[in-house]
Length: 272
Image 1 (tube, helix red, strand yellow):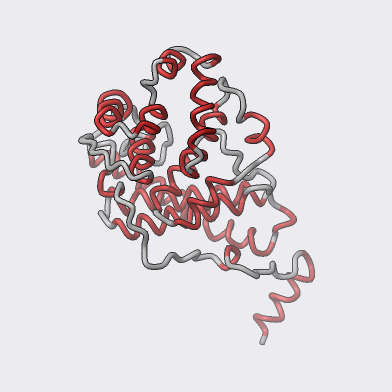
Image 2 (cartoon, one colour):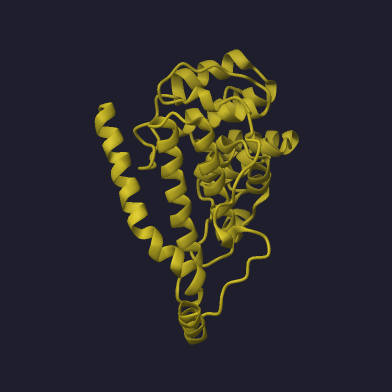
């Protein structure tokens, strides 16, 4: 897809999300008992990710991009435990947190647990096993991470099983801090693989970007020369301040009265 086509696709996504925004923001504040709160928060998180992608790839505004990824991560974290909330089947939400450079959301998302994640993170044939490996890598729990690699070497799927047995997989190279081998693996094998997320599939490699950013986060400044890996987002440069934007994400927020009492309260407010 050419640059004009992919930009138009992103613009269409923005228009779609923003057409839904007023109603969903009303629902999350005033109709919480009538909706799946986690699903709505997830939708708002996706909107923030779309805006983050647009900020970087269209507007070329790195700070604005990081702010949106921070917001997306806050919304994802707020959805945990809510009906329809994030379950971390894959690592896309972890990537958003890493790209924000916001220590608050990175540390939170590296420690988050859901029943499904806890149940499935010990099975090397399950996607959440790999999500847990990302969490361990961010937290610097290297011995636990090494034992996960060994599990894949014994019980994982081919060809990753052989790579882990030979210590040629990404995490083995990360633990050895082998910058040259990491660059070769990401550049030649993972960077060319497009994201499967419709938000950024024409702009970014999920695996290449995630692995490169994780390297930088752990102090290994890999250099990847590929259009699907946004190198300007790799250095760890947090913003001076981040904004949670929505009142319902701020500490101490209490939902307004719901149902009939809520409607009456809002009607009185408009009359005064």
